[in-house]
Length: 60
Image 1 (cartoon, rainbow, N blue to C red):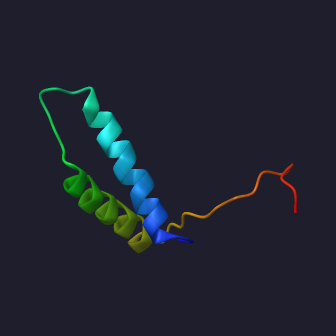
Image 2: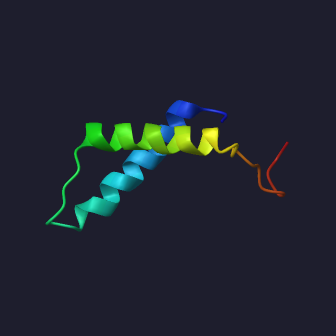
Image 3: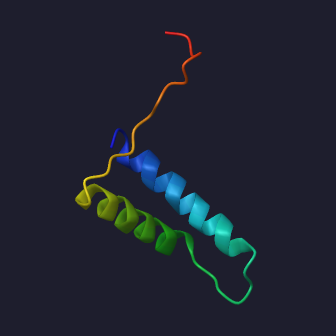
């Protein structure tokens, strides 16, 4: 993974956004960060990689 902190932040932010619309279930920022780390670790242990890919039309 190119930038593990950025990956964790993106996942945690997405988790928090998902739960904003669910009044019966709440998740705090710290819990979302811990969950994000576990998700990234599980992906890594499965041999998967998250990498930045430049679009074909991006400048060099």
